[in-house]
Image 1 (tube, rainbow, N blue to C red):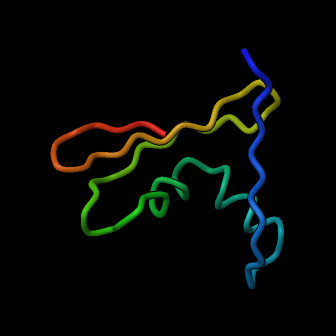
Image 2 (cartoon, rainbow, N blue to C red):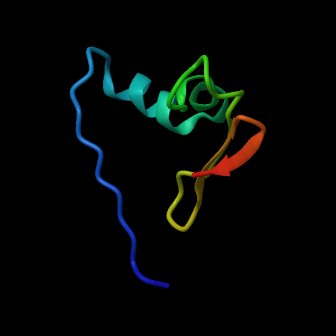
Length: 68
């Protein structure tokens, strides 16, 4: 498997620890990680922020399951 990386860069008016919790806590991420709150159903998040872990989101759109 090829080495993969993801770099996200943006400035938020929140402290680093709070932002880390929002990105890595499944309950928090499930509430906001979707393109539209009105067009997409609830998001299911699976997050393991350790090296070798996974970061997966399952979305519902128009009756179709999608995974990111």
